[in-house]
Length: 280
Image: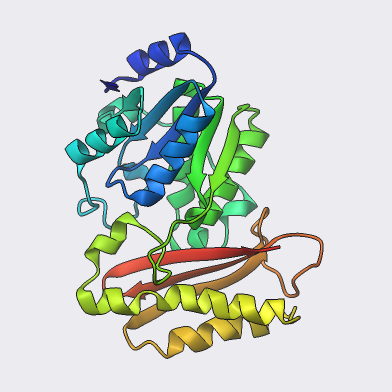
């Protein structure tokens, strides 16, 4: 396994690598959710590349960039155990050199939910992923469904800019009690960790209402809010979104012929948790 810090060397090694090449972009602090992507990429491709880069441009001024969990040596060990060939781990100044001033501005797919709650977040995500795609030229890139709106933004960018990457979405990995795996779960206190599965219970309650025939988005949303409202350690509900799973367009009534995403973002103590389910 080679660890590369410069864009030029990573581009050269990927250009010379056996094809197909699969890319797993990460911000490090790897958990089993990341590793499920790595394992699928290893199974699908001749060359497996991963990136470890805590992207400063997707963090807002009051967010946790400085405190974001970092475990670089452990991450490298895990990637080597999973058979990674190339790991791109650049410093921020390599990705955003002095004078950098070109950004990807995603459209309506990025406007609601996370886009509204975290202004500028998806501009940073889209820009860094576009850079990773152009540096590595992967045949496939792997992302987790937990960040459902992020996947939609990346799919739209990839299609609109003719980047030619097959974007593979893998199922959300969960703890036995339903909590979606996330690097930020490490911030939860024991009491908060006990309360956090309320997010998944809320999604399941909304899904259950939908499966019993309810199509009014307001009533489906209310089923999720009812669960979240009972958990005293859920300090705030940023949103419960009922949206088209591809366009992220808010829905008043769920259609029969298109997948629907129920997405939730809450704050438990100092930790912001997001999760979603896709209904088909």
